[in-house]
Image (cartoon, rainbow, N blue to C red; front, side, top):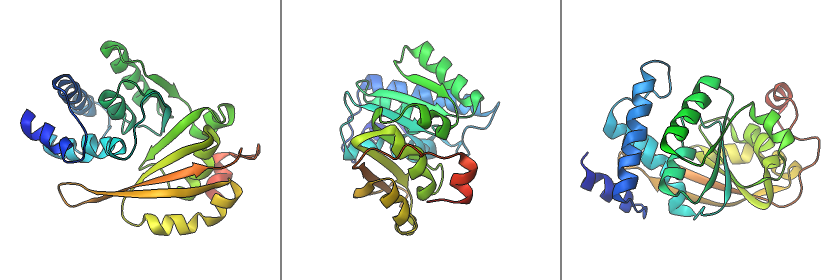
Amino acid sequence: MNKEEFVNLFAKYHISISSLTYEELLSFMRKTLEVNETFNLTAIKDENSFIEKMLLDSGLVLSSIDLSNKKVIDVGTGAGFPGLVLYILNKDIKMTLLDSTSKKINHLKDYCEVKGYKVETICDRAENYASKHKEVYDYALARAVAPLRVLLEIIIPLVKVNGHFIALKGPGYEEEIMESSKAFKRLDCEVDKVDSYTLPNGEQRFLIFIKKNKTTNKKYPREYKLIKELPL
C-alpha cells in the first residue's frame, strides 16, 4: 500500500493523515513487526493486513469522538493498540498505556522515549491499578481484552463521573451487553451509544460507549479471581 492509498483509506473514515503522521504510523508498524520476531506482539505479519486490522481498526475511535486534551487510558494495551495509534494520530491526547506484561510495556516505554512521545506507560494488573486510581480518566479504552461484564468492573472505577468506557468489539457484542445487565446496575453505568464500522475486508467493528453516571462503590474492583469466577 503506497502513501496515497494509505491516506485515502483513513480519509474514508474521516481520519486525516499528514505526511508526518503517515511516516510515524509506518515506523510504529515496522518496529512492532520487527520486535514481533523476538517475542509475540501480534499474529498479523502482512503489512497491508496490519494497516487495516491494527492501525485503521485502532484509529476508528477518532471517527466517533475527538479526544483532544482528554485524559485517556488504554487498558490491556498489549503492543500499543489502540492507545499508541490514537496518540500518534492526535498528539493532544493525554494517553496512558497500561498492561501487565513487562516485556510489552518496556517495549512501548523505550519506543515512546526514542520518539519523544509524551505517553505514560504503566506495568500493572488492571484491577490493581484501578483500585488506586479511581475516577482519574475522561475515557478508558479496551480492545480484545476480556468479556464486557469482566471489563466493566475493572474499568468503570477508573473513569470520572460522566466519563466513558469505550469497548472495541466485533460481532456478538449485543449478547455481551445482555450478559452485563447486572454489572451495569451495580456499577451505575449504561450504554450511551454504539457506533459501527466496516473494515475494507468486510469485517465489522463496534465501539460501545458506556457512560458512568455515579461514583463507583468502593468495593469495586474486587480481586481478579472473584471478578472472573463470580462476575457481576
